[in-house]
Amino acid sequence: MRLTTKGRYAVTAMLDLALHRGKGPTCLADISERQGISLSYLEQLFAKLRRHDLVRSVRGPGGGYQLSRDIGQIYVAQVVDAVNETVDATGCKGQGGCQQMGETCLTHHLWSDLSDQIHHFLSGISLADLVARRDVQAAAERQERRINGALSADRIAIG
Image (cartoon, rainbow, N blue to C red; front, side, top):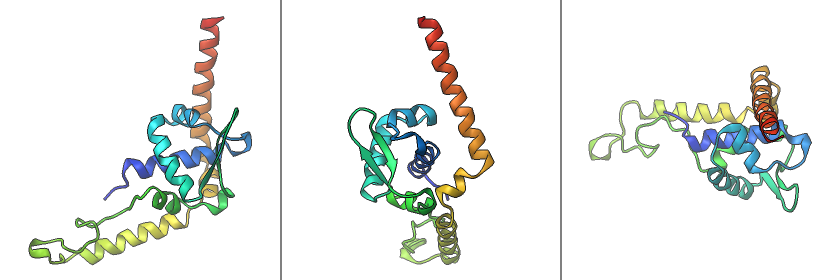
């Protein structure tokens, strides 16, 4: 059982937006640089996030993306669901044909219940909850220092 890259990247990008929400729209290139996610992949994810009304785009100079609602009203499960991701602990993708001849295995319902519990758990965690965590804040500060350090080094090399 695992959450694929699509779900993890979508949550990471949304958390990045939440962390930078007071600074105006955020362009995907900035998220790409901070989080190490390809720009083209972010564009695909944000098209889905926009369709699910989790983000809105701002066009023109200084444009980018913003969260469509308060960070306390966006939950991790909504983000995962928006990019068509599932957290499935079953070996049959929840279909029930786990064994030969399409029969359900002995532990199908156990793993199905676990999948439901994980989704329920993620439904209780908002972006606000994540932004408030010290470990998230420390990682964001580290990323900013890395990016700002690289920009300063570029300015010195150019100047």
